[in-house]
Image 1 (tube, rainbow, N blue to C red):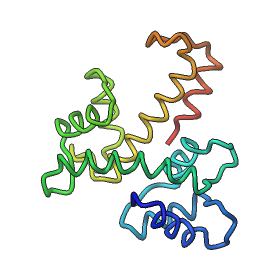
Image 2 (cartoon, rainbow, N blue to C red):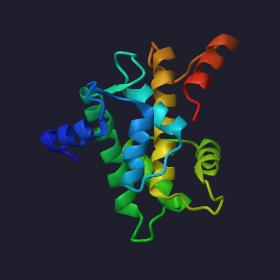
Image 3 (tube, rainbow, N blue to C red):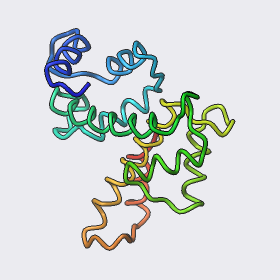
Image 4 (spheres, one colour):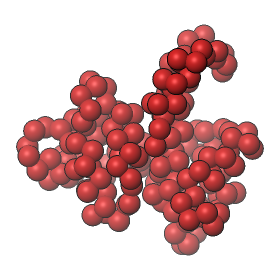
Length: 169
C-alpha cells in the first residue's frame, strides 16, 4: 500500500468509529483480514513504535510511517522466501541485513528462536514482521540512550527495566 489515497481509504475503513485514529484491536482485526495473525501485544508494539504523539492509538500520519516500515520488511521477506511461504535462518539473516539490522550470532539465533512460533526453524511472514518490530523497537530504545552514538550504553537497573518493558512483545 504505497499510494497515499489507497492508504487513506484503508485507514478510514479500519477507523470504523471515525475518530481519526486506530486502536490496537482495530489494527489487529484489519491485519487478520489480510491473513496476518499478530498477537495484540505485537500490534500494540507497532503502535508504540510510531505513536509520535503518545496517544496510544495510531493517526493516519503515524500509520503511513508504519506502512513504510512494513513494506520494507515484506519486500525483504518476499525476496528470499522462494515461494515456500517461510524463511529459514540463513534467509532471515540475509533479510535482516537488507533491512539494516546487523546482529552477532548469539543475538541472531536467540531472536530467531524466540520468534519461531512453531519451533521448526521456519519463520512465516507474520513471525518475521514480529521479529523486525522487536528489533526496531530495541534499536530505537538503544539509540535513545546512546546519545554519543558510540554503539555502547551503560544502564542502571531502572533504565534496563524501562527498556525491557518497552520492548515487550
